[in-house]
Length: 79
Image (tube, rainbow, N blue to C red; front, side, top):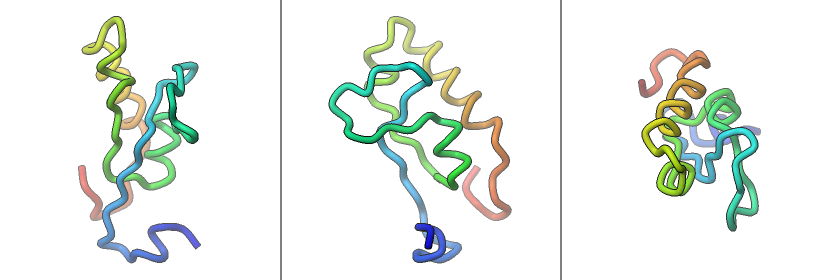
C-alpha cells in the first residue's frame, strides 16, 4: 500500500531529502529527485541544503521547481 492509500485522499505527504540529479546526498540515507517525489505523489518537498549550499541558490530552487512542476498533480491536491 502507498502512503496515500493508508492516509487517505486528504492526507498531506511531505518528502524530505530532495536533491537534484547528481547532487550530493550529504548525510541523508535516502534522497529523491524533485521529479521522483512529485511523481510518487508528494504534496510538499523539503529541499534544505540542495538550495542553501548551492553555488547558485536561486538557480537551484528554479531547477527544483521546474522539475517538480513538470509532473501532473492528482486532482484536488495542493498546487
